[in-house]
Image (cartoon, rainbow, N blue to C red; front, side, top):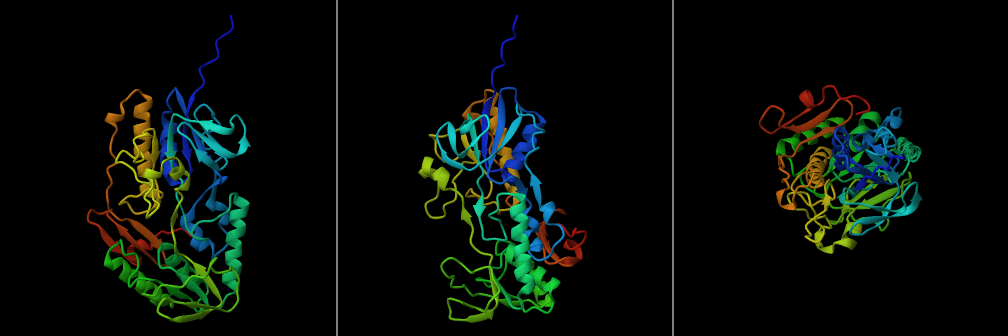
Length: 376
């Protein structure tokens, strides 16, 4: 007697495989349901450890460690999950279309539930446009080269990436004239005033020229990644001379794909995805579609650990539905609603905002700078 073929597993699909999907995936692997498997669709072949990109744009020797392969994520157990290297070109109610043929699926993957974790785009080197490890390493080495050759680099934008990059350059090359231009009167406005004070003091000690309260006129297409005389002008008419300009501003939500399916779930002004507290998108026509991470509109700061926790809530609710639960019984995401961050300002200095000891406090190098590995 020939045994009957087992019923094929149905799919839960994640668009994107960064921090929101990672919390989701690692928890999924611990106890995968018998009826479904997880399909991660990600155009990059490797998880990018973006926290270290500012340092790796200046200092060499650890670039290879910053790209972690997705290939073995599920231990090659396709019935538990599978990573599909492709780009989603369209989302439909119960399937997605891909930009290329992939084994088993072709150009279409059906799903019962979807996690939209497409993230945001920010300028290089904060995020890289590369799709492979080799391409990513090449881009970081290109930044290392032009920064090494530059004598007067200008960093535009005093968010975490700009702060880290300015500090790393000045620490590695003390003789360079490093200018950091920031549009506001203080750094990291979402955080405590003392975090700004610590940061400003460290950069001043390093010798970074800090130009505050000046918004830059950006040329169309941005600044070229090459060393040559450049003049950066601000809205007030201030002119800053240098020989390399690196842009560290501008976060664009990757919400266009979802917006084509559900325009009402995307904020028309900010372009971030609107979600319910259950992490479902804010569109009752698609209760089986969830979103998490930097792409969503939320009071959480846009850092990896919050994306991770949002992904876990989406997973818990999807598993509840898989196990026969009702949409009326889904659990809300309970945000800690605290702004936590650690910024390495070179290898010897750092600032941090933490609640590790109870109250939310900002601390400087004497605590935050201890035990930071060179490869972050």
